[in-house]
Image (cartoon, rainbow, N blue to C red; front, side, top):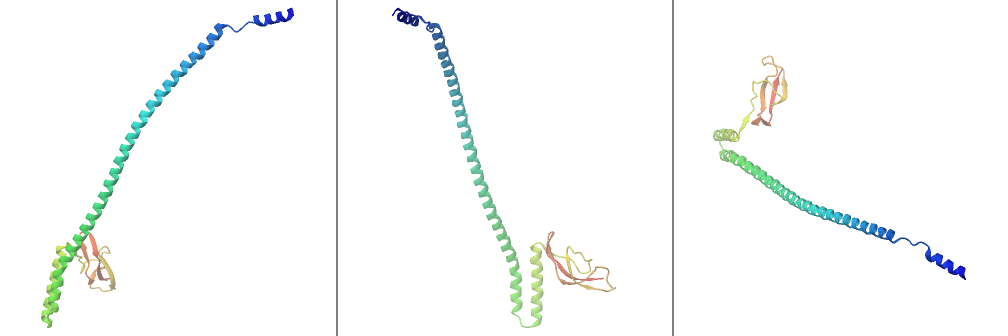
Length: 195
């Protein structure tokens, strides 16, 4: 029995962890907790700043997107207006060209009223004169061909003749007159070329 008591006393007297060590561990845990809290606060501040920057960037993006949409709408309106203006200009030019031809038609109708050959000839001459004036008003000129040297940029050779009286590639007959407006060929002159 004494042995049992001694064992109990020995067990009681076994060294317990020191209070100082426990306090140190507790302080380290507490200090680590404070450091963790500082880190968490710092990270929260960084997250808040990032969210603020993100909100600013989203605002800028929204503003740029609005500008883009307005610009796209303006371009679409511009394109539509330009197409309408182009169509209107074309229609106006077309109408002006046709209005310039009406006097020629009027002269042909007057010439058709006559039955005798002399008046018909006068009427056709008037019509040709009126047509030439109309073309001149429209800025259309006749391509010179008769007696000129053949030029494939202006003439279309459909016949060829060998004749010593003419020079090489000289146009000897105009089968159909050619016309141009400025530098643009409207119709090539159809010609007969010698040699």
